[in-house]
Amino acid sequence: MLTFFDSLFIIILGFLLLGYLMRLFFPLIMRWWTNRLFNRMDMKEKTPSKKKKGKVEITSPPPKNSKKSLIDEIGEYTDYEDID
Image (cartoon, rainbow, N blue to C red; front, side, top):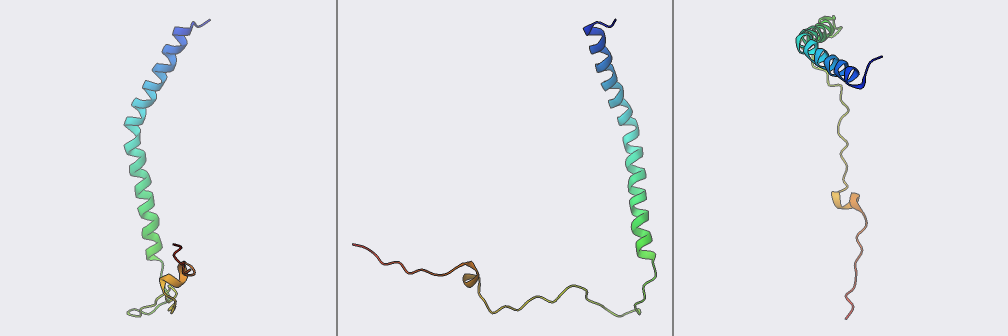
């Protein structure tokens, strides 16, 4: 049966080993993940579009031209009287 210090030693050794392995493999995993991400983005750009070359298309909705000022949107103005 393992004593308290033996199990504590095994847990600490496991964390140290995990940290060492992550230090070795984390750069490789990140390099693989970023290459995969860039390849996905590149494939999206290479899909043929049905637009003609040189034609510009705006997909965002036009801004609403509101005649209300900022004060009208905040709330109603109340005139208070001074009490002497």
